[in-house]
Picture 1: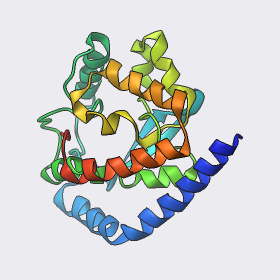
Picture 2: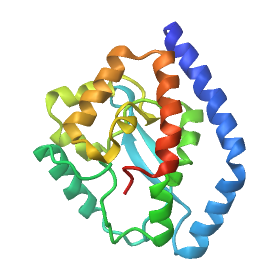
Picture 3: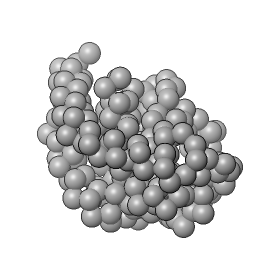
Length: 206
């Protein structure tokens, strides 16, 4: 483990712990609201692909109805990657009828992603890095897209503070690779601080 990786892990543990403790009341409130406003589990658990292809279970607050058809999302992602179209935060469809009213509000401010700090504490993810792809995405990746897997995935990253849903998938992937090539604690901290106003403004969210 390099000095950067060691210090980055310490940063992840310290900030993720502080954030989890600081947002604990909101975490509990959202847990109750998700349970009360629609049937189904509180958390949405999905297999994702991390560093060097290692698979792990990523946690989110459930923002969709329990009987949602996930084939709709797969078709959307395939279209986004194959044709290089713009049109969403890669994993979130615009005007998706599968999303609950509470889920739509949580997604606007990225609150559905709060449980991912548990993934950071477990070591599956980092605070900063490429978003972890769903396994079926790899089936349609271009060869250069796989460079995104050369570092631990993150909750936020360079493309999230550089256009969010205004970028095509190729543009997002290019920014992820740029991050990997130039990653440093200074860059990580810059991205974290830039993420805060983007998240709370809801700009670019769907």
